Every structure is written in structure tokens, then in C-alpha cells.
Image (tube, rainbow, N blue to C red):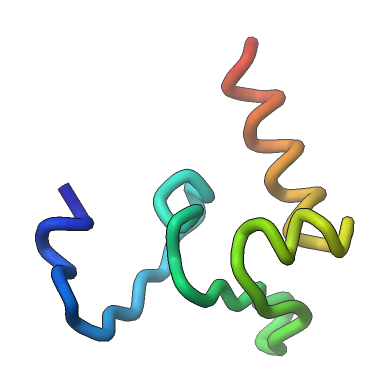
Length: 64
């Protein structure tokens, strides 16, 4: 549904649910008001940092 609304526009999405932003061209991870990581979903998972920890926590919770 979001993909249709965004179309070919530049869109800023603020999300706590990471599945909402997995297909974004650029994801910014903000911690305490500072950008701590940036990249695509694949790039951020490969960094094994804050985004990966959030992703793992969220999807483990969804599995239960």
C-alpha cells in the first residue's frame, strides 16, 4: 500500500516496524538524536550493527 502512495516521489518514512522500510533506497538509523548508521537494508544487515540488532529483535518477537 505504501509503495503505491509513494510512487516515484521522494518520501520520508519514520518507522518502528522495520518491515515497513526494508525496500527503501536509504535507511537512516537514529539513536539518541544522532544518525548512527545509513545504507540499504542489505548494507545495514551486513554491517552487523544497531540496525541488525533491531531487526533480529523484531523478527524474533514476531516468530513467537
